[in-house]
Length: 206
Image (cartoon, rainbow, N blue to C red; front, side):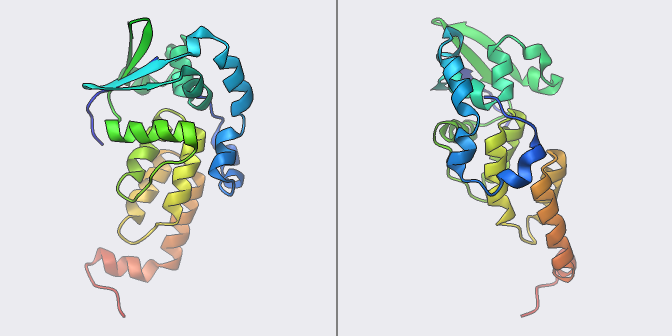
């Protein structure tokens, strides 16, 4: 993961308990579920109007009401409750004010990944591939964006193979992603001999 710094100028999702049910829902449903009331409430507060995001020399802008409605992490930052965050996450975020805008500087997420995260927050979609999905999942978990966690998990469970299953199950346990964890276990059970051959460098039989 790129460790350069990003900034967000100036988000709330629930726990993973309903992950299995929600995985069958459309991205649009995941995006709008619960967004309406929070978005309307936040939109009425000047505190949630605009936010700028900075990584090294890269700046991006977003609406505070969108970030706060979808991300528990950014909601805590903008509501003045940053002390409630996990210490590791809190230490990765710094805030300043520039031209009456809140600027959130982010250490751990690279600009391209953060751009895709912001696109998802507004559209419920982003361009996923096997190269960037791990980075986006990391960002979704780091900033506690429930709908994005589910969206990326939906992609990853359909792209499990012998080359990435070990990394996938590592991420599944790291972020306690029940769906991804179970699908990886199922893959291990169904493809035990293939995985054994792969680990020993033996090409699959035709």
